[in-house]
Picture 1 (cartoon, rainbow over the protein chains, first blue to last red):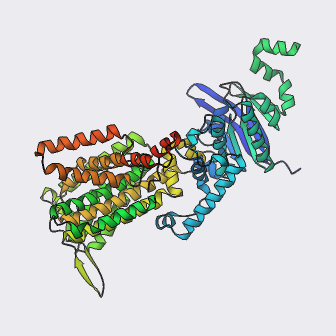
Picture 2 (cartoon, rainbow over the protein chains, first blue to last red; picture 1 turned 90 degrees about the vertical axis):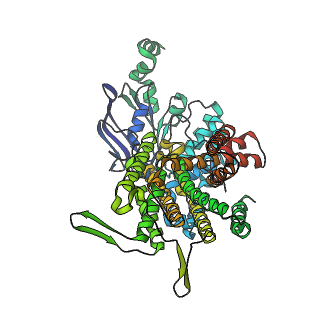
Picture 3 (cartoon, rainbow over the protein chains, first blue to last red; picture 1 turned 180 degrees about the vertical axis):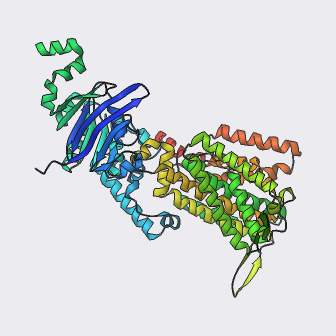
Length: 264
Length: 343
């Protein structure tokens, strides 16, 4: 067991849209190598938290730090280059391109040729392109969509498109992955496939922040869970503790449901 | 097979002056070639990054004026008693300066307007072209205004010790335009079929996703604007030294529209699109002029354009690719429609 090192730290983050408080005051830490799930009812502020962490949204207050570097004021592409890479809630792939070209585009940060190399197609450009091609195959194989490499991304079945979304994120060489509802809309076998991929990534030491509604999955894969409701953290802990937490039950099932759950 | 098509086309084009006797037709070939180069440069912005530059002729005109003024020399009084004097330089420096300064203008326009994107970019580019036109029209001391810059020297080619040749003739200019066109095509091809090109296409398709994998969107938009403007500047320089007279009408909106038509009908976002569109809309005026009255010519021109867009909304090149697709399954139909790797 290696020492626990905080990877992502969220300190007193608040987000206000005009008078609406999307996130009131959020504090939590994701440790290196950990899989932390962020759950909560619809509108609890999960996706807002994602957007703040990855630079798509500026927090009204507070600070997000990744491995000691403050992310405040950084643009999304700068956050990605620090190794913090996200996926999107809805399928997000370059639909008009082949699966392989998608991953090749995702490998942008790994390229090392400059403009002159490219315009004159110098040896360094060719070498760099070859490396990118090899890396793309490696990622497609890891994710398990290598057989569809030459198909059009927009024509893939839904589950495969979600996997391609993860492949795109992996292509940016993340040290931490943020997954926004990756299995929503997937059928059982697709979800199973996705969970096996998550296990593989964890074996490689990837830190993961997961937002998900699929409770069996969340309970099955998470090391810890943070529960948001109305922009506040109402509970935090390992899956077993969260399952028993009265606050959480109330948030999900309402007052009456909580009573029923208590009697059961 | 497909990769040899451009080589065959260039080889065929290279034979044109050998069998074409009519200087009027050869002249049409040359001006068409120059505008095709400009259309190729516009395609880099419009077709690959998805940004519509409706002032693209500004870069073309700047290239023409910079090149002409470098070759002609000028004496301008900037403020009281302070003169800027420039002695005439060889044309080749004008050509290089045209590329550099047009590229610099592309950088400025891109940097200014890509913060806002979309419709704002269109407005900034239109305004930029209009401002440049007004400067060319009113700064009479420098540009001679509506009196036009005349006696622009032709391009001189040659090597020290071997000798020089002035390209007064049409044949020489034809090969010069063909050569520059091939270079522009190869530069754009290398660019779009690379990591940089993928970044440009990615930001057109899905900007959030592009950002999320670490692509610096603004940087690649500005880069596309620089390369695009520089190539347009080169085309402008060729235009100035071929016609040997330029006036502020070079900045007319009509020329931008012509370039946009060439790109859209040929197939934006394909390498061959602007070449096919350029050839077509270079040829149509010549053909209709042979049998129609002047008023009818423009009507036919417009009708033809509408017909192409109506029948082939993606443009001619994607339609041809679809036709020749090896197995025209439904998936590939969609693929070829959005193909960006047309050779």
